[in-house]
Amino acid sequence: MATIDVDTAERSPSGRLLGAIPPTMLVLLGIVSVQLGSAVAKHLFSAVGSFGTVALRLFFAAVVLLALWRPPLRMNRRAWAVVLGYGVVLGTMNLCFYQALARLPLGIAVTAEFLGPLAVALFGSRRWLDALWAVLAAGGVLLLMQGRGDLNLVGFLFALAAGTCWGLYILIGAALGRHTTEGNGLALGMAVGALVAVPFGVADSGTALIRPWVLVAGFGVALLSSVIPYSLDLEALRRIPPRVFGILMSLEPAMAALIGLVVLQESLRWTQWIAVLCVVAASAGATRPPSPDARPPAAGGGE
Image (cartoon, rainbow, N blue to C red; front, side):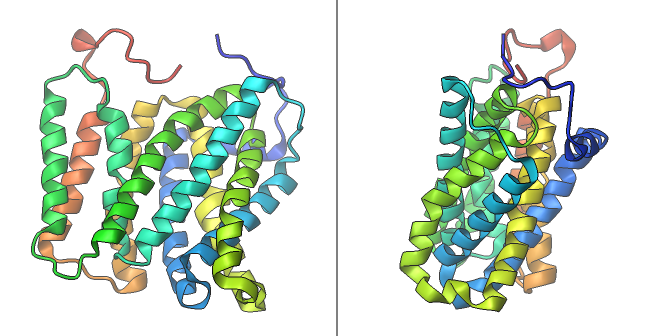
């Protein structure tokens, strides 16, 4: 039985506000927010690089979340292990993803990264249909890479590494929701992630990080890419199982491609749009719950 360290009956105003929003809407709002944040972040690369942008994002996100939730430091050992694991995965995921984003269009970077959550959905499945979804996703990856001479292989590998971390983020995020309350674990985990990322940013960008307009832009990226979506995701993961969360997150690559087109003017070839839709369809299919008469035993979705 999962244990909660603090009584969940008394929630803060922020917690009650999030609790009043349907979990599906929480996930969808998080998707839009994080992709807008990525588009804003890409404009910062020319000033402070990808490492500097990650450092600003996680530092400001940690400051805001710690001030908002004021989490207690007295937790049991298991809760602290989950918080530390969450923070390390979070910091590594962002470092890898922004390295990919510096080399690839937003839609392609997110589509490649999304293979991580898709792998979480497919792992351990006993449904024969999931083999079809895996093939469809693989076909999408091939379409992304074929006939595109300017597709950066290093960026693609960074996106895959970020995807691996994203898969772990979903699993550890569910555990974080079980062992901490409200945004307490998220705030502490974000602080750990900032400790992972900030040294890279300082070493890469130095005093460029403290220019006023850079600080303002970095604060905006922190809100859009970390504070808002991670808070929404964590609340949603408390109320829906990871498989349902995965279905809703299937929209992420398509939303990234659309925002990349509108905000960054990053157009994709028609084959790449098909590739994005292949990954979206594969993820939606793989994470769709089985019918009641074909439900596998011990699915383990939302403990």
